[in-house]
Image: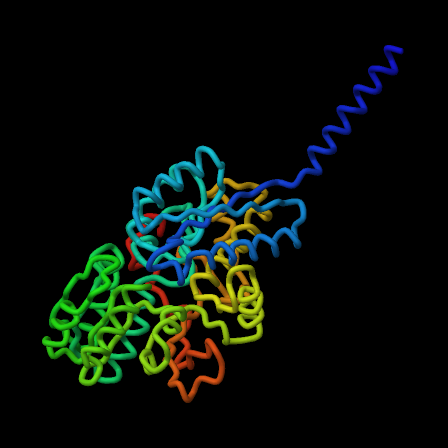
Length: 401
C-alpha cells in the first residue's frame, strides 16, 4: 500500500509539472496615451486596438505565449503617466510599455522603465532626444521623431522658395524639439526664422499667436504642435485669411487631423509620414482589420496606430527569440537583425534605439482628387531610410561607440 501511495504521489507530481509546463508564458504590455483629449484621435483607443491585433497575431504564431494588453490614460501629464507606469511595474508586472504621445511624459517614464529593466516601445514619441542625450538600452523609438519631421517637411518647402519662416511652437517639449530640429534645416538652406510664439498645450483660441505670425510677413508659418492644437490652428489660420499670402507648414500632422479639417481646408498641405493606409496590399489589409475592430467604426489607422502594431509584434517576437523578458536582452535581440515589416518595410533598430525605415513626403489631396473616404494623401517623394533620420553619430547617445 505504501508503495502504491508513493507511486500515486510521484505520478501526481509529474502531472502537476507537466501541466505547469503546458501553461503559456504570459507577457504583459501596457498601452499608455491620451485617451480623452487632444491626442485621443491620433493614438487613444485605436492604439489599444492595434496592440491587441499584434498580440492576437503573435499568439496564433506562438501558442506557447499568452499576451495581456493593459491601457492607461496619462492625460498629457508627466506625473500621471509616471504613476501609472510605477503601478504597472510594481503591481501588474508589465514587461513593456508602448505608444506614449506627449514628449514630457515620454522623458519622464523613459528613466522609470530603464531602471526597472522593462522595454519602452516609444511608437508615438516625437522628441528626437529620446535617441540622443536620453537614449537608453531599454528603449526603441519607432515611427517618427522631430528630426524626421523637420527634415522632410522643411526641406521640401525651402525647395519651393519658402525661405522666411515664423514658428508657432507648442510651449512644452514637443515645441522645443521641433524648433531645435527645424531651424538648422532652414538656415543651412539659406532661409531665416523671423520670430516665434509659444501657445500652451490645449489652446483652443490661437488667434493672438496667428495674428503675430501673419504680421511678421514670413512666407511660411510653421505650426509646431499636434492633435487638437494643430487642427484649431489650421482652421483659425484660414478664418483670418493667413493662407491667402502665407504658406502653412504643419510639422506634425496625422490623417485624423486631415479628416477633422476636411479636404477643402487641408488641401495642399505638405507633410511627412511614416505610414499611409493606402500604400500597398499590406497597409490596406491592416487598415481593413483595424477599421473593422470594435469601436473603430470604419476609421483607418494613423501612423501611430501602425507603429503600435508593428513595434508590439516585433517586441513579442524578440521575446520569443531571446527566451526572456529581460529588457536589455530583448532590445538587443531587436537590434540583432533587420526586421521585415508589413507596414513599414525593412526596419533596422540602431544602437541608439532609433528604428530606421523609409519616410514619405505627402500632399493632401483636393476634394476633386479624393475618390473615397479617407483617400486623403498623394505621394510626393519617398525619403530613403538612410536620409530619413538623424545620422547615428550626430545624436549624442552614450550607447554609440
